[in-house]
Length: 551
Image (cartoon, one colour):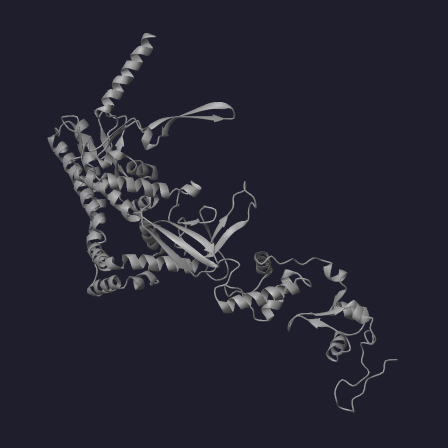
């Protein structure tokens, strides 16, 4: 009991010290404790510059993974605290994803003191109590959060913005997050929400031609599970949203061009600065090793030999950052020419040309869209697509977009074509399967709404959208309808003989459209002349041509 009471009092004293902002464990890299036990920025300029580079690159790239890839690709090392040593030491190494994520999620870099960010998570799994220590707690459950305790590398607004970006980049939260920016031609993945059922629209690519579709699929537990709620063509919707964004940000085009010119003056500035600091640090280590070697007694070879080896290693270590710095200084590719400056200014005056340029990055467009738009709610009403844009800042804009919705067409002419195609398919489907229907539609020169040729799958999709019946084997025979090949077998004559009988009206037949098969009713074969499909009269009007009598 006494031991428990002592532990409780010690823990309470620890919490009181944390409440005053005076309890420190492992000091975050980039900070040190001063003589008054207060956090101050590390006096090492290289460490401060490296920490600032992480936050600036995340603000530029908007992804922890992209920052890690960029730093490793450019061979930029970051400081890391080593534990277990008698004193606090920093080791420089290539960054890892987890290390960058912990740095970006730590409020100490925003000038805040936080304690109790991790806690215990208790769950019931298979009827048993499971306890997981070290679980990351939400901000409202932190024990202590004190503001403006020390100088930060970023402000609190930027820290919260970074946390929102990291949360939105999570791809495993389903409806709760936008998802990270990925490759692909679509500009609005993760931003669209169905106005009918309230769920996020998913994205798919398909077809021989580059095209995008946003669709909403109902969950399994609801009625009509697996059915598509809405499917929307992506090209026109992306274009309409892009035009609205360009209309909003057009006044800022010149400012953006000037900022691009300023940043383009030296694209390797951050890399060169890190290389300069690395060279300076390596030279200091080499000079320190040289001074230690000079201070040693040359007769004491046990000590002088080891110090000489260290000095040689430091001199070799200096060569690598010096070579990297020399390459960056000699690289003039990042500097803009006068023609490039003029082109940037012209693009700033006409943002639509910059947006539509083939060299424009899709990833940058997506990040621009996500910077200004929080969400877009789309609804299909009266054969029109209505979009409500929710901007960051609270404003809303309603758009009426003339885009293709699955099962609907975009113009009066196309609507008439749809009706004709539906009527044709509804008739052909009573005679043949989807693959044969697709062949007939292709012979007639008809195309889908996307300008593609017909296939069995596309015919099936068209039938489903228009609620047309499917082909049933044996249904035509039940109606007593025969096709040309079946009549040939029935009468035991050639196919051309039957066709001549149809052309001379001797045998009644029906053809839905040119290129479609002939349909002959079995009852018409029983009529007079129906089974005498071999005509006696001459085929042509020439009186010299007579029919051949078969013996």
